[in-house]
Amino acid sequence: MNSIALLVLLFIFEDNSKIDMEIVLYRIFVKGRVQGVWFRKYTFNEANRIGLKGFVRNDINNSVYIEAEGSLVQLNEFVIWLHKGSPLSKVSLVTFETSELKCYEIFEIKP
Image (cartoon, rainbow, N blue to C red; front, top):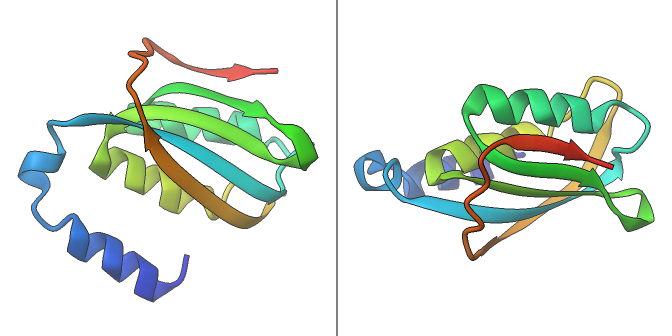
């Protein structure tokens, strides 16, 4: 993520008091060299470190699909991390959209 996009995220979420309390779900699509490079395992570890719930799975066209629930602060930290990914990955695009909560209890790796 470039520095301008990061600054925009920080500006938008400057007032964290309200954002920390609301739980939302992000549907995240990650493209690039993200299969066969331990991307799901590293994503699982990072999601658990941040405290997110949901899942990560390989998707069609050698991409990865993630559903993650947490606060906007947690989710945006996660999206920033996804641009880096695992040491062997090469992420070319990360997109996300909000969706209805599913009330996941854990974060898991799906096949």
